[in-house]
Length: 121
Length: 107
Image 1: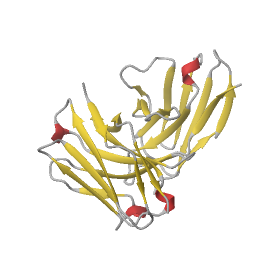
Image 2 (image 1 turned 60 degrees about the horizontal axis):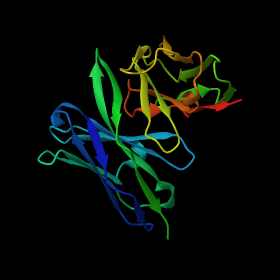
Image 3 (image 1 turned 90 degrees about the horizontal axis):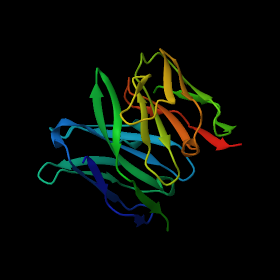
Image 4 (image 1 turned 90 degrees about the vertical axis):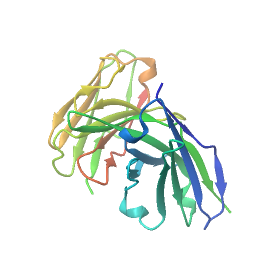
């Protein structure tokens, strides 16, 4: 079945970087773009960006420009998301979410379970 | 960026009730509007895409409507597992954006 398996919880100090992985299985890797979404404690969902699994091109939300990186490894069908220069406000659960398209509509239909990231000194 | 404003921010209801959540966009987004359910400690779950199409496996008590800049999510005959937070999300413009969420609580 279609699955997105994310890496485990992380604790980082301010100023450090965090790398979260998302291993995709059960579908053709290059056919579906991948989005990343985060949710701070007690807060709503925040869209971070998207990566094209074929060419690797990315688009990020403006607030993350310069601090966010998304890559993919086609050989292991794994996506990676890195946030640098971490601050306490980056404490959140980070999700990868596959995007499907039907009749011109795009939506996130399969989600990973989430990776908690805590930024604390 | 497209702003999505949900109302109400929270509501109290009982099992068997019908509830409606509204999502207003800061400009027209055609029908590029999706709804998700989010339970505590769980990943969001897609309910409706394209404003009104029920995702596979979602019970028919969920329904969506609207177009342009105003949309609704209706849950008929609330079940215990429906008490959760609901988010609208637009996919017409990058960056994609979410509403702030509507928490459906037990009365």
